[in-house]
Amino acid sequence: MNTKRWMTMLLAGAMTVSLTACGGTADGTQTAAGSEEPHTVAVILKTLNSEYWKCVAAGVEQAAADLGCEVQLQGPPSETSYDEQINEIETTLAAGEAEALVLAPLQPEAAANAVEHAEIPVLAVDTTFSSDRLLSYIGVSNEDAAAALGEYAAEALGGQGNVILLAGVQGDITSADRMRGYTESLEAAGCTVLETQYTDAATDKAVTAMEGMLQKYPGQIDAVLTLSDDVAMGAANAVQQAGLADEIAVYGFGGISGAQPVKDGLLKATVSIGPYEMGYNCVARALDAIEGKQIDAFYPTEPEIIDRSNVDDFLVQLAEWTK
Image 1 (cartoon, rainbow, N blue to C red):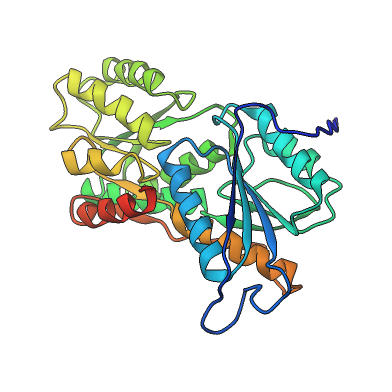
Image 2 (image 1 turned 90 degrees about the vertical axis):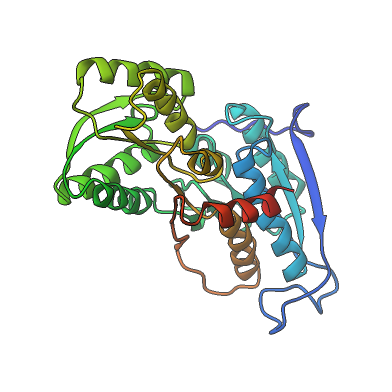
C-alpha cells in the first residue's frame, strides 16, 4: 500500500548537514566546476549517530570537497527511526532543491513507496531496494563479503571443524545473504555448520543464543561466524564467560566496531565492507546521473579481512574517517 505524507518540515531530532565545496578533480570529470552553480545531491543515510555511518558520511563529505558539489546530508536519530527517514525522503523530494537522491533505506519497501514518483535520479547506498526509480546501488555484496570471511575462517580451521552461525532478524535479506555466503563457503571448504541461530541483531540476544549453543553442543564448537561486530561481541562475551576463549574463534562483520576487539584478541577477525568508499562513490555516481552519463546498476565495494596482521593500519584509517 502506498502512503504519501507530505510534510513541510522534518520531525524534531532528525539531523541535516549541508556540505558545500567549490573545486574539481584534476581531469575535470564528475564535477560541477565551471557551471553557474554547483550540482546538489541529497544523501539520506540510516543515521548519523554511529561509527559506521560516520565513516560513510566522511566519504560523502570528501566527495563534496573533491568533486565540487553541494551535498545535503541527512539521517534520522537512530536505525529504528523509520517514520523520520520516510519524512526526510518526502520532504527532500517536495523541496525540489536536490538534483539527485542517494538513499540508505531503513525499510526498503517503504523507501520504494516514498520515491515512487521521484522526478530526479535515485540511487541506493549500503542497502538496496526494489523500485523502477532506482538507477544504481553502491555497496557491498553481503553474500560475497561473508563468503570471503567464511573462506578465511575455514582456512584457519584447516578445512575442517564445526561452526555456529549467529544471524540477525529472521526474514531480513541482509542477514539471509550473509548466512548464505558463510554456509556455502564453509561447507565447500569441508567445515560443518552445526546450526544457525537468530539474534535480532542485538548484542544481549547474541549472548543468550551463544549460551544456548554452548550447552547444546558441549566441546563441539570450533568457530562462530556472525551477522555483525555487535553480535560477535555478544558471542565473544558468552564464550569468555564459559572459559572457552582459547578454543572457540569468534568472527565479526562490518569492521568498524570490530577492529579494536580484533586488536584486543576478543575477535579472531572481521570484514570491512568499505563504508568510506561507499560514501564517496555514491556522490560521484549521483553526479554522473545528474550530468546524463551512463551508470551501472551496481558498484560493489571490495570486502577486506581485518585481523591481527593489518588491524593497526585499519585503526589509524578509521580514526581519520571518524575524527
